[in-house]
Image 1: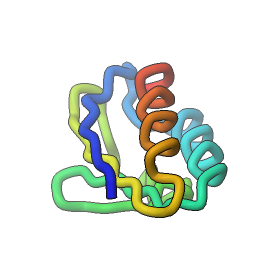
Image 2: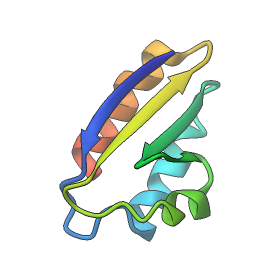
Image 3: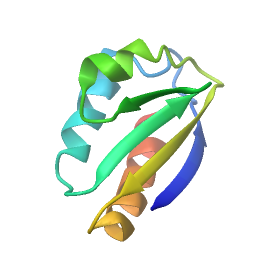
Image 4: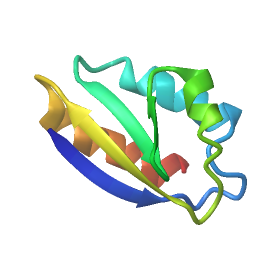
Length: 85
């Protein structure tokens, strides 16, 4: 299991467009990806669950990647966050 924390820099947080892109991105991996904010967790491949977290700019999320390809997945997902969120 690999984890990293990321502070959202996008002006409107995790809204529909980046949440949709993130859900699509994590479906590329066999690993399970979850995002946690303030004790609430969501599976990253579920768009509505991501939106329900209500992540705003300046808030920090914890991303957990667990599975066979977690090494590759965690580095590529971290890069996705840095480019899009």
